[in-house]
Every structure is written in structure tokens, then in C-alpha cells.
Length: 369
Image (cartoon, rainbow, N blue to C red):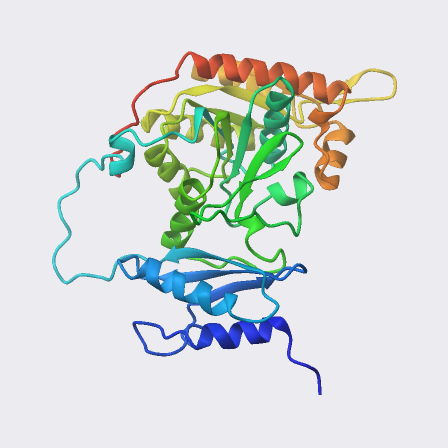
């Protein structure tokens, strides 16, 4: 018979904490997911809550129970929440939704400059661009943060070489971002096992995202880059509402199937009053051995679209093996001395200069249609 593992003992301890709604243990009630035990004994898990005043006591009780297990050296619980219970009363009339109270009251910004990196279409290299822009900015002497806002497909642990690492938690129960390649990063991928799929509804995703923003001890950042998920949905709206962003950079490949979504993305950010700093064309061409260029995905599509949309064209990035290799190895190309590093140094400078012109604008009032 196999011996019980540390995870088994932690599950048993968590199941001794009653679920306020059902009276069952937290494990039996399905409140706990994503439980992971690191080799150094640190435990992490996701706790579903009902978004109410009992949230913090329940998290404290769960963390205390897990910490009581011999061999556990630390515990972090991430709260997520379902939507509010349905009501029998008719919905209120549609009206503009103001920024949350903390934004309206001028809550401390996580950085002096906040820049989102977005792509309405997946697979265009947005995360590669976000990571390398952040590393390039850090190499210029700035204190830089990078938030991985893609809850379903976090890329930061792999691209920064931090798979399996977990942030420390301060005495004030705030997470310390991991410093890698000069960049302070935070991702849901640091809090869950890489083998566990994230199967959450929208409210849970938004709750986790807000917690990553609010519960991270970012320190005194000059700039925070946000790697957003593809699309024009809830995450983008939440970021626009929660954070006074100084601008967004749109990443696209040259072909029309990607540019169609770029137009949608630019329109969405303009509607939410987030300045579009410009468009970066990725995978623009491939340089062949004889020095000629092969425009595999078409030539100049993003530049033409930028002109059409009257937004700046920030530059083009060719297909470079070192970019892919660096991302897979957790060694961003921008940290080196090659063509990619020089290109991202120039792109980072252009992005920061564009953002400086929009800094200080108030957060938008967003109307949900």
C-alpha cells in the first residue's frame, strides 16, 4: 500500500474546514481547486467564494488549516468568485458604469506608466512582444513590471524561465512578483500547477485578474506592461475600468485575417478611452540565405492598416529563430546583443515616448452595450 502524500494530508486538513453554504468540507463542496505542493513544501490553491464579507475569514481558515500540516512551509490561497446570486427583481435600466471606487478616489497606481500589449487575434506573437518590450525597457535603466493577464493561457512562466517557481507572500498577505531578467513579473501561472487546466466562468476569471493586480506588491515601478489575452472581451474591459492605462500597443501579423481583428481591437480601445499608441507588425518577413526577403504572410499589411486607422505604425519585426528559441528557453532575445535586442530597444523607446504623451488622463467611464 502506498504511503499518503503531503498533498493528501493537506486535502484532509482543508476538508475539515466547513463550507459556510453547504456545511460540507471545502474539498467535498468543490470550493478548492488547483491544489499544488511545491518541492520546498509551499502549498497553493484556488478557493471559490461567494464574493461577500465572509471571504477573508474563509481564506484565513483554509490557509491556517493547510499550514497546520507537518511539512508545509507556506500557504497561498487565491480567491475567485462566481457572479452574485440571481435576483427575482427586474434588472435596472442600462446606464454608464463608472470606474470602481478605488479608481475614482485616486488609488495608488502600480506604476507611473501603464501600457497594455494586445492583439485581437491569437497566435500573432503578442506575448513575445510584451516580454521583450519589458526586458528592453528594463535594460534601459527603468524599473519595469509585467502582468500576465491571460488567465486561461499564461505564457510568462515559460517565456521568463520561471516554470515551477512561486511568488513569496509578505506579512501583509501580498504577493511579491518574481524578478527575472530585470523585470518584476506576476502571472496566474505562478500560482497553479502547469498541468492543471483552468476551467472557470467569467466572474471567476475577473476576480482572479483583479486579485493579481491588487494583491501584488509591485513596488516603485516606472512602467508596467500588461500582456492581455487575445480578443476584445471581459479582461480588456476590466483592465480599462480598473487601471488608468496610458495606452495600448496592438500586435498583428501582416495578413488580412489578423488585420480584420486589429480594426475591431482598435475600435474597442478607442470606445473605452484607452489611447492606441500604435501597431507593431510581427512576422513581417523572413530573410533568406541570399539576403532577399520572403513575405510569407503578405507585405506591409499592418503598416497600411495603421495608416487607414490613423494610428502610428511603431515598427516591423521579422521572423527570427532567436525570438522563438529565446521564448521557449525562458531567455528573452531582448536581453542579448543581437538583431532582436536592438530592434526591441528601439521599439520600447518608441512605445514609452508615445505613452508619455498620454500620461495622467483620468480613467474612463465605460458604457456596456
